[in-house]
Structure formats: structure tokens, C-alpha cells
Image 1 (cartoon, rainbow, N blue to C red):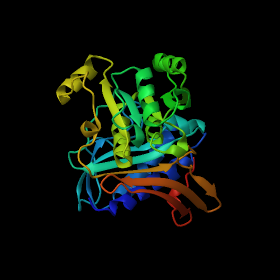
Image 2: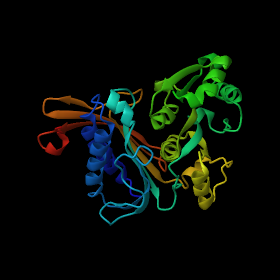
Image 3: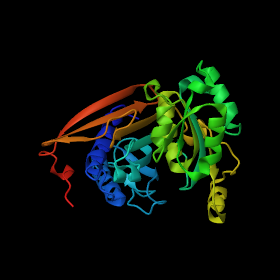
Length: 321
């Protein structure tokens, strides 16, 4: 893939973040998601690539979406798989919370797992703990392994977990082991990425979230030198049948190479609301400011991009009711 695609993708996430940020705290998550999706699709149409959406968003929430199989780009340039979540954290934006992102991940055509929209059990770490985790091991054993790899006491390890009743056992074991916990309301893509940056204070992610988000997080962690493991967790017979049709044993551990093959992948994200890693969109007068990260697995380059956008020259970024 051309390296210029990296900055092209930032334009996409910036547009989605600017549009959806207008809905922050207004309690209308579908409107925020629709705004992000519309903006993202419009900018995609200007990018020189032949993209196919293999992971869309919104099926689980019955929200607006870039649908699986949709063609993106100008129809010229590299053939790529696209995994996209125009607004990772719709509830976060609706309530004005932390860590909402607009995210995109791409890889060479055929290299992203076409993950079904179901739950996935996940464990993720940054570069220092690669090769030390095992999704089939206990929470305590994984904590010990990560603490050893990072030269920390377990009491100094911070685990991030989605705050859901289904994670009560994980949370109890974390507390019993003495680890510190950062509970998050939504947005486990951000939670996984945060494990790879010391400045966030997060060492490991545990828990069950969306499978599509697991693939998006895998692209980011491949770029960052981190690791995620996953297991699909079908909740009914229909979801089990979907796994069977994909040829995936529900007991199979999905490794980084299963989730995103090859060494050429790009990840881009723009903050919609403030988070540990990225600042959210700010509006002042006729300008909007954005904070983004873009990374490429092939080169290992990570760039943070601050943007200042004239809303007078981009009037479509101003949203009414």
C-alpha cells in the first residue's frame, strides 16, 4: 500500500469526529453515529483506493452503518480490506463521556478477518508483554506474566475492563490478585490501544466485547508491536452456525496473524471526546480542532496529528438539529 494512504485516512477520521462531536452530551447516539458515517463516506469517495468494507458498524445497535461489502474509494489504487467504526463509543458521545473515537483500519485485500458481529473474549497488551499472555490462562496467571515482563509488582499493574455484569468474575479476580482496575463504560478499541502507550497508565485489557472491534484493535496493536488474542463467543445457535460457516471453531484462539495477516496495515483514529491518548474535538468560533493518531505496521511509524479546521470553508461540519 502507498504510504500516502496514512494521511488520507486521517482526513476521513477527522471529518467523522468533527461531525459527530456536535452531538456530544445530547443523548442522541444514533444521530451522532449517522453524522460520523455520512462524513466518513463522503471523504472516502475522494481517496485513491479500491476498498471493500469487511467490518462495518452498527448491526448490533441497529444504527446507521457503512455496510459490509460496500465499495469505498475512487476505484483506482491499491485493493484493500477496510474495517471501520465511524463512532466507537456512541453511548459515550451521547452522555459526554471519555474515549470516544472515530477509527479506521485497512490492510491488503484478503488480510483482515471478516469477523461476525458477535461477542469476542479478548486479552490485549503492549510491546513489553508480547508472547507472555494466554487467553486460556487465568486472570491471575496473566497478571503475573505481565508484571514480570514489565518489571512491576502486580499491585502496580492497571487492567482495563468494560464495566458490565458479565465481567464480575474477572473484576473479582483482579481485585483478589491486588491489581488496580480502570473500568470503562464503552470503547474497548481505545482500551486495547491504551495498553501500548506508557502515558495512558494501562497495562492489560481483559473481557468480552464486539468481535469487529477486536479486529480493528488488532490492526492498531500490530502497528504498535503489541498483542491481542481473541475467542468468538456465540450467544445462540444462529451465531454458532455463523462461526461454523466461517470455519472457525468456537474454542479456537484467534492470534494476531488470524485477525490481521501480513505486515502491511494502517490504523487511524481521531478523538471525538477526551481520552487518555487523544484529546477530543474542540470548537471555538469558526474553527474546530482535532487530535489524531495514525500508524503503519510495515514501517512501525506512529504519528500524532493535530488539525485546525475552518468551519466556514467546511460548512458541512456545522450541524443543526
